[in-house]
Image (cartoon, rainbow, N blue to C red; front, side, top):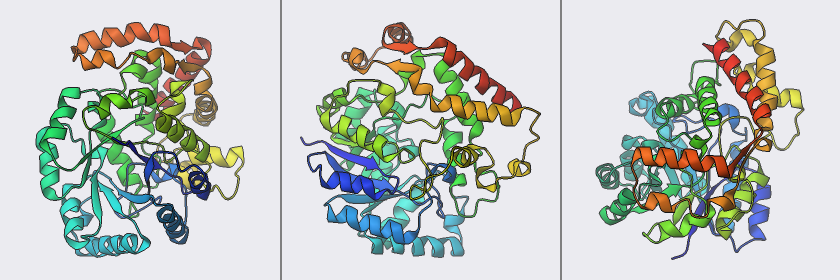
Length: 406
């Protein structure tokens, strides 16, 4: 069985130049989207690079020249009903027609209607069901397959549910794909809400000027994650060394998250997963939404202040009054402090990847919830090294920003 990797891109041609000279990597697909579309996607536009359609077409063409497929994301969980309006359908068809002419091989969607709609009108286009559709049962997988799905990305929360994964492989004929490296809380109570916010924040007709509306979710998840280090282990990421466990049950298609990351970060992640090993901090491979890792216009380097302004909840508007909230005195100071501390968080938290070599075996035995929680809590003390003084300051700043927000 040959492993296949679907990797993200920030539209930097440098990634393709690297792939051209490293043909031994397991990359068979690259995925991305423009910062704003009619349907929207799984990331807010504030954290995505702003590029032209001409650049996108050039990029997709070069991907195809390398013999790699290109997948485009239209995976917002909600389009606000626009997909049913005459003008919305007309716009959607125009967009899909552009994607097809640009050489896109497949589109990633979450909305069931879009699976049928695209399958009927664009027969050449393959359909991948997004992780945002939360396919977490045999029944849901079968429904999406009947609608026309060619590939189903399983709910990230089920990555260590081996009974379900085996059942899915037996129940459907379409491809099964797993997302490898998110760091979302296991059972995260904000996940559905957060994806809805990000979906709307990446839609062309989104009315609210605060394009950084998911700030609350980011702060709460980050606070919980680093207040309880065991949550870092309970998150459903998959280590490069454990890919063979999934291959043994017939899953060989894997997706690396990280289209908001830098090109060097993407290269490091795809190398680690292609080589099936990584010596260092596991956090190096995991994506989160804590801080912008990427200069929005990579063709023109921006100053620290410019980059910081992109991070503020006001997005591109540069006007604090357009934030839509009555911010108390000191809020700007807290936000600046949060940004600076977040950029250095991986210098203060170290998860020893090699110390997790037998970690996955526990989950193969299908333990109970309480057994798992105690296992991760106990193990975290040995494999996670934390600079508590630096982390305490970070968590205090998060708490202050939450209080200001609320």
